[in-house]
Amino acid sequence: MSETVETPHPLEQLPGDLMMWVLIVSELLVFGAGLAAFLAVRIGDPAGFAAAQDHLHRAAAGLNTVVLVTSGLLAALAVRAREAEQRLRTRCLLAGASVLGLVFLIIKGMEYADKAAAGIGVETHPFFTFYYLLTGFHAAHVLAGVIILGLVGWKDSPRSVEVGAAFWHMVDLVWVLLFPVIYLLR
Amino acid sequence: MLRDPLLRAWALLIGLCLASTVLALAIERTSFAGLAATGAGAAILLLAWLKARIILSEYLGLAAAPFWRRGFGIVLALYALLLLGLYTIPVL
Image 1 (cartoon, rainbow over the protein chains, first blue to last red):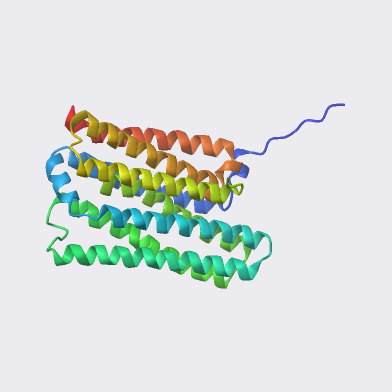
Image 2: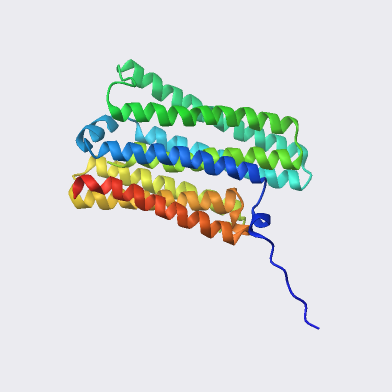
């Protein structure tokens, strides 16, 4: 008699919490629409957008990408540590991820201060309207993520840690799409 | 050689981030123009797509869910093509 191997329903294959995936997709749609709108507006003034982009510090933004990606690694390692019942290691890794999130925000704050000192604001050019809107909204997510990582480090059930880390990876994912479009494409 | 898939993913992400930043700085500091600049822009978008795929597969665990990894990969590829189309319109 042959045994039939049942493949799980696709929804059952999805790792982690379904609602977190709903949130991840929603956020990707919001940021995705914002980035597409940015490039659509750029069509009318590519030279103006390139000139405005020259005021950004690409190397600092690249450094921030390294910071966020490394923070994501620590969050992923925290999930693994919690599954292995290593609670102290989990909390240390989550703390490390949070600290790197704060480093990201400090670098971002310095970038905004630099722009403000140069007299560059939201209404300086449409490029900067999108720049402040998209990077500011993302920075708000980073701040929320740092708070969430702190909370799941405190109430560290395996499910909480997994959901908190998934939120953090979503922030990471948005940045790796936002960074090249805003800072690098000329 | 990194055996841990998470560390391997992190190393790849760092490499791709550095590659896209170096590419952008090269465009800024050299006389890349017209099609060359557009080609470099397309390469930057390709690198962004690869980074997003790695985060979805390894950090978010879709490597263990091939159906969803494929689905997200296709949608992200279509989105990257949309961005590429919008990016290249001014040089057409």
